[in-house]
Image 1 (tube, chains in turn green, red):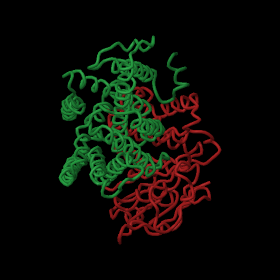
Image 2: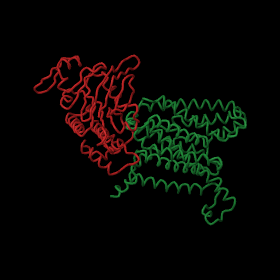
Image 3: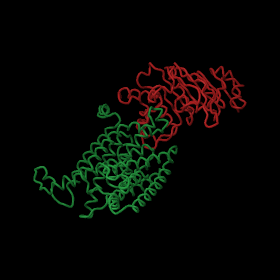
Image 4: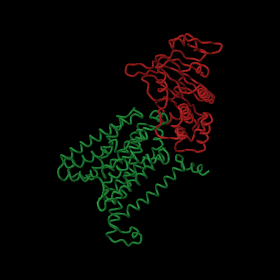
Length: 344
Length: 256
């Protein structure tokens, strides 16, 4: 029995789920390869292997395309992972960092630091890191508020969470609007560039710390898969099975806040990825979090690198905002999801 | 080897739900808690299982205070079956049962597989293992949760330590044959050394299968003892404010 021997090594996932994981890894590597090969400046990436790239080509490959594609992969993984974790924590399939206002909270935090840093932290040493840090604070704040509002509702909490999301999104919009209004010219430029959001123009120095933090948070979060499974029985049942609910809640809120906060601070708001990806992953192979979390991260990375690729090649040499692509895929999917719930 | 509950009082705001409740749940015994709706049965079970803290009084598991036992250690000595909430995502029946398995890091596949076969046979649900939990009937779902409650107590060294199973109306929504099947499993478990603490509504069922019975009314223990000691017409009538008659020859209660 193939599956019996297999289960000896991988306790909580099935052979099918393991196969899906491997397939996704291969697809991700392939799509990253495609992502760095295609762009408005045309040359063959394969020349890299026999060292025949010109200096300009090498510059484009190593310092423009590569960081961009890697950042897209990491942000896609981060948003999807956070979607999967939040859907588990709220026991609610419609939780998505964008939809319920977590990204907007991060955006407000980020905008605050752009528009206010000159007033509060003149020539502060850590200024480049102030932006991601206040974005993290913003998203942690929103998740905590949502949790307080929706606790004790169970399945019908879904409606309240989405309504709260509308309110928080609106509130963050007001906040960003006010900040834009009171900004001076330099701040306004920073804010506008940032709100448009894209993977373009990133540099290694900016994204390496982000990548390290996001990836280590993702790996750290994988440890709580089992507890997230138990949480699906309900909070009191999970508690009776030995899960420290308060700690679990704090862990998920913090990890989601960190990865969403950093992602939003680097790329602006990119919607629907966190909603769509975990659903796709569940449809393919099952709902247990030992499978769901890592495979959501991989699928999210694949989806984001492809969306970024589309955004670059659809109207060459200009670029579409990547959030436009993900929303174009995500919003019909969201409608389909609601439709399916009605029929259930 | 017992759970000792001493002088438990519990109040929410000014409303007293439990007043100085004391009782003892022993190994090898089925202890049934009976009483009208709203008398505080579920609250008492939640206090004994450690979900909530009483305002006064103590709960001791084998001479250790309950609040000195860590959350994970509590899960190893007692399992609780309550009216569960629905599960939103599509877990398989096997996955739901596995959630009760506590070994964690030192997972031994053979041990789990054996325990799974054992609860599958005991609860007669082996044929459901690969089905989706959400597609089961209400009664089947109860049985799966019951299997999960049982397997939680089958982890390592359960023979040497005392284990307790607590159930809040496990037979609600079950037809009479499934009800009897569940109670018989509990009887067997108590003979194997488990202590069983169960809230029941069916007076006849409790009479036939309990080793100890407590009647609780308005948060107070009204009567406590073996079924033969406490099943008296005046006690039963008093607890339920109803004319209850008890036929000693066929050991059957009637109230209509």
